[in-house]
Length: 85
Image (cartoon, rainbow, N blue to C red; front, side, top):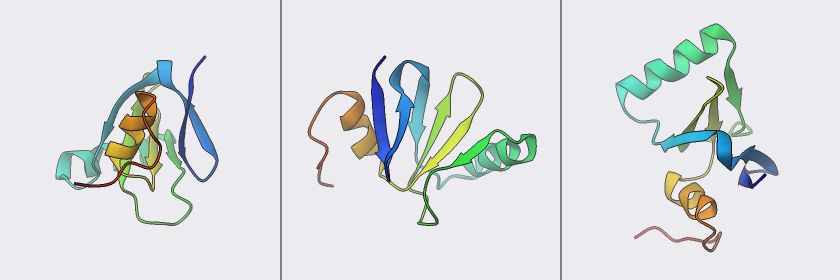
């Protein structure tokens, strides 16, 4: 089982990860609110700004303080210190 670091010592299973998306659009905000209402939201951002939303195959939605590009790099086994640009 491959585990992906999503920030602040939190790990998720790569096999269960469906998508990593930016939290800025209205549909994603609705997705997060619906998950919160159902009790399926996990906030792993530790109070920091949410920079990515992870959707799992278990119907859980996870909030992370890392950029989607950084998490994608970790899923693909690339350097964890990816820079924007």
